[in-house]
Length: 269
Ligand code: NAD
Image (cartoon, rainbow, N blue to C red):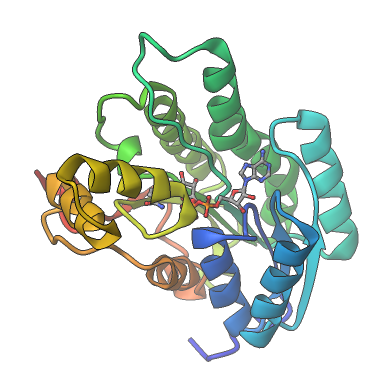
């Protein structure tokens, strides 16, 4: 796998203005891809993300907008990115999370989480995968979670969405399993299932744990990680970026329909 092995490829990474998505966009950019950056962010955050991905070595970088709660906006997003370049790599990363009991969760929370974390992946995949199949190369990487493999209390919409993404990915992997061949790289669909990764998404939970133990932010991280993740270490966004990049390699043509935990043995328990 040469350093610039994604030269000439175009990638769309949803939710890449922040956290894990930005790290994946950087990793794909570092291998020479054209990267479509996307997310809900201020113009300053958007520009900073585009600059970061450019600095990582991307051949070309452009920001595309689209609120993933709205199927029409997803259609427009895909049309706009396709106008810029044929989408070879699709990373469904954008996600939202709320900690709330089933008793207290309302329809609005359910609809939001299912729309962004699950339905958006269905819409982007159905719009991009046929062309990947025709070209004999494609990579779909869906960022699920340990919560796509095991449950935790107070996360019913989130866990349902993440289990759903794994099911959706397995069906797509089956439908495209024989597209292309080993030399073209095939069309693969996999999920990455992170445990705790230090990003803005988990900040409220870090603060909750800090309050619970009566300590500072570091004490909050320690308490939060100790509960679930036996390694007692957080994962960095860049480490998830490296896993995603590796899946884009041609030699990964037969790795499809899988869910890869990056969770310090959380789901081994
Ligand atoms: P983050 O909050 O840093 O980033 C989320 C991204 O999604 C942002 O770019 C945001 O703009 C985008 N987004 C949110 N709602 C959107 C909408 N309606 N339309 C368009 N874009 C929208 O979060 P993160 O921690 O980097 O999470 C990325 C993914 O990783 C999510 O799917 C999350 O569930 C998953 N994940 C995170 C962790 C963790 O510990 N951080 C663990 C497991 C899974």
